[in-house]
Length: 582
Ligand SMILES: Cc1ncc(C[n+]2csc(CCOP(=O)(O)OP(=O)(O)O)c2C)c(N)n1
Picture 1 (cartoon, helix red, strand yellow):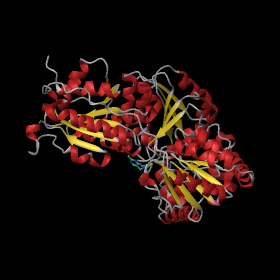
Picture 2 (tube, rainbow, N blue to C red):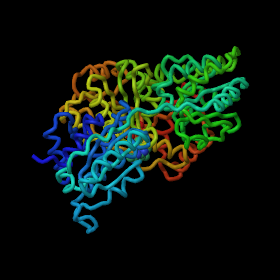
Picture 3 (cartoon, rainbow, N blue to C red):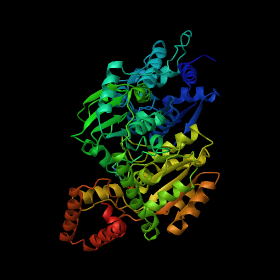
Picture 4 (cartoon, rainbow, N blue to C red):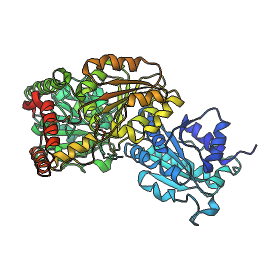
């Protein structure tokens, strides 16, 4: 049997540490799938939509830190990868995408299924090249892998079906992929300038991003030494919130707690490994220093007094001995006291409002956090369930939480859970979606039963594209086309061979969730919640209240009085006991 390009592809992927390829088989990919059939070191993970495959690969790469792979057949097959690849790329997840292509002799003729993947994937990759003949294969594949691993993002190889089936020229030997990252420590002068800034400031606040992923202890030590409150982004929540007496929550639209106030009331803000994009939630008058391993991020969100190019952990390790310990805890203690009070008010939605019908989403997330494993992996869809997850799922040392945090795509949670469960077969994996996001790639629940992946899928079934409804209302638009007519998702799950649990009453929450989580196979929990559940941002913006009033006024003028009453009643019900927290 000749050694084909397809066989060599798998050899190289195994060497790179790839354990599986997510995708859908098809025509031009046949030599690859045939090579897979004969290779026991790498598995094919058969998803129902290539987009799910790309999300799954991105999730695997984010969770393991290693390169993951996905593939799509020519034309529409690989085109489906694109949204998941954008997500992986923007999350700095090292992913190799194999975009299979039409026969090389047909390129440029308008052939059946012809697209130009090397153009299409440019924007969502560090490297994207067409392989036109076997002699070119090794170097292009190596470059795609090395770019994905080194620059952290997507590398794409475009492989025509005929080329991938051709015999490889004589073996060229391993190309020694470099996977070990260097640590970047700033120069002494920069460290001294940073130490001076911190030593001369009275009130220092920290705002932590994903760059703090491996720096929990250093961040807490810094906070302890200079008496700083510590805020964090959603993405860095799992790495910063736990075992952290200085934690003050998140800023931004989905934020909570005292983060917004802490970073505005300090006289020096340290941005640690964060590229938090919502600059209107960042201060403009405070002194700001930023540390990031990506130099291009320094200063692009806010004015800077000092930018430091370095790895957060390495920088803090070098910096800590240069700092004078502060003794005045007034700003820190005030902030922590107010934070505790805000958390108490936030929990009103769980303890009191949460007992009412229609069910509110907050007690659902809080109950899930209580019953989920201490090392569970959560994936959260874009939409309101992000708010509930950010606020009520508690971080622990070993829990992980990922979402489409930079790209902001819906329908990410279920396929990301597939990637998580494949990478960690022994861990509890919980996908959290809205009904809109879930339905968007719902076909892939079939993957759970087909591959017997014991994923637990929680759907907030509020019959609405809730986040958009809220955005419309607070933006002054009457909500339009946001209603969803849903089936009983638990019954759908049962029909496809999963356990289905439907929860309509808060009293059944804990038992229903436990039943699903204890089930050894895949399970779906369909939780019916209030479409009018409002989330109050950590820092309320007056224009949103004005927008809401305007939207209601417009709806009254167009005769939709009943809907207005429903919306307002729902929101009053929802915010009733916590209005003072606005
Ligand atoms: C692929 C994609 N399409 C559209 C949007 C815009 N969008 C953001 S949130 C949202 C609604 C989400 O609704 P649902 O999943 O039901 O969750 P809910 O907000 O109701 O909890 C939409 C349409 C998006 N972010 N991604």
